[in-house]
Image 1 (cartoon, helix red, strand yellow):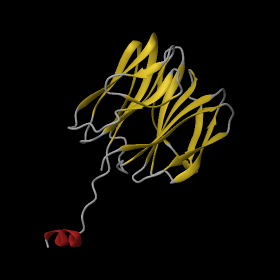
Image 2: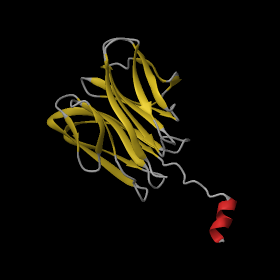
Image 3: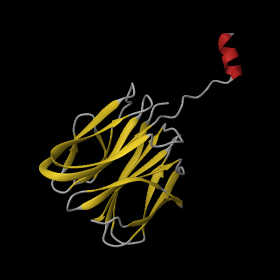
Image 4: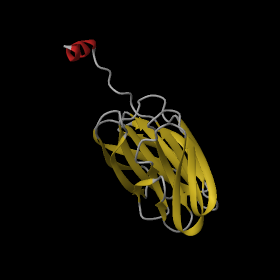
Length: 213
């Protein structure tokens, strides 16, 4: 079963606790939230969707700036439900995206964090299963970030952070690179993961017999 995008949204949290409604639909669902956290500190204390806690995949610090973090939740509830967030101080930005067709166990298959500086940079992962997608949360300190070769912007705010994905199956499995650009040279940080597709439905024995008749 192929992975597809379902929905996406951006939200700026300016008080704690805070909440925002987000709608998930479809089958074999995955909710992904990239978070722009505090300056030099990880200040998220709780992140839930419909009362269920998300799992943090990783975080990475932009030199002299803020942390970027990536959270996921398998099988989020269908429909419009609240994302509830609690954090220590300041403000947060949430980059929210949902996907269909995702395997409902063992996610992500592989992940990593990266940092650097420049006006062009990249994430490279070696996928395990055929037809994986890569998904990343990327932040730069200055300028505006955009997608380049191998990357597609899933959700952004027209500023220094965005969530990207490969927007297509990576097949066969192996090394894959997503490239990014900024309009000014800048320190950057990222968290990237590979997600595997749900297995194709297995035909029942009766259906197989009927096909042979």
